[in-house]
Image 1: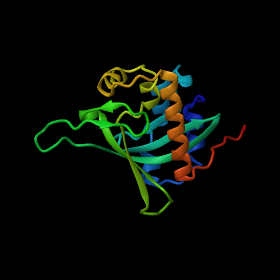
Image 2 (image 1 turned 180 degrees about the vertical axis):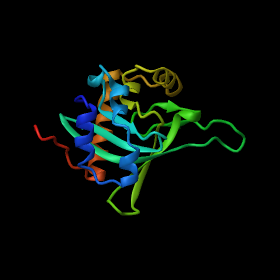
Image 3 (image 1 turned 90 degrees about the vertical axis):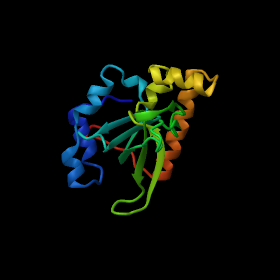
Amino acid sequence: MREINPQTFTAYASQLKMSANLRRRLRPSAAVDIATNNWQHFELLGTPTKDGNAGILFIELHNTLYATTYELAPINSTPTGRAKPVICDFCKTWQSGGRTASITFRTKARSLDSVSFLCCADLLCSLHVRDKTNASKIARTQLREHLAPEQRVDRLQHRLADLVTQLALVPLSTGSE
């Protein structure tokens, strides 16, 4: 992924249709904090608000950058208090407990139409498929998956391409592009 600094974040965010409330709550430094010096390892990067319940999701595919707003809701435990395991719809990482969430995207601005997916609450799917997190190592043993990291990255990119198509996302640009 190309580097996103607070200035480019602001330029990209200005191209998205979002509520004034969400715009006010965004943290431009979140992307820099998450991906500092590791930009080449990301196809997907969530930049959450201060409370972590919403944000902007950046997706880069074939050197084209897309973005959309999202809402994130944690998946609660069962009534018995036992953590419910979930397999992320993006990276296929097995997660449990407070590490799981449901991500919702609006398909049209000012519409109630939306699509939701189960996901990793940290939205670090790009790192999970590259085996750079503890969650990814646990997931490989739980799922007994025997794919190389390159195959998992390819699978994530295909899933993100489907998401870009489903949401009809338009590529972002800066004044220099």
